[in-house]
Length: 91
Image (cartoon, rainbow, N blue to C red; front, side, top):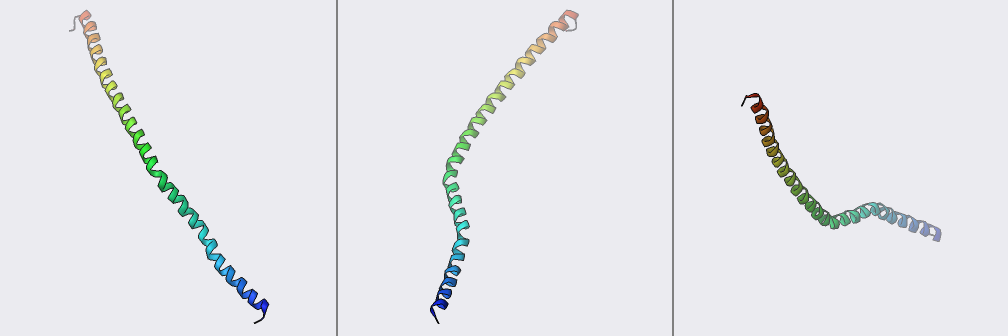
């Protein structure tokens, strides 16, 4: 085997090794990205839980206010009907 034949074999072997390494680069990058997401997800989950708790508190405040307004409107409506009905002699 002469020198050029050895160089060709060596070059073929280098290419055979380089191909799988090149094919591994995108999956390795994806693994690094997923690992980074995994590390940041607890903070994101904590933040979302806090926002959810605030949202629940605000909804409860709105429900309470809606109940109060419903009661006040009912009382005011009842009084208005009595005053109108009283003028007509209906009540």
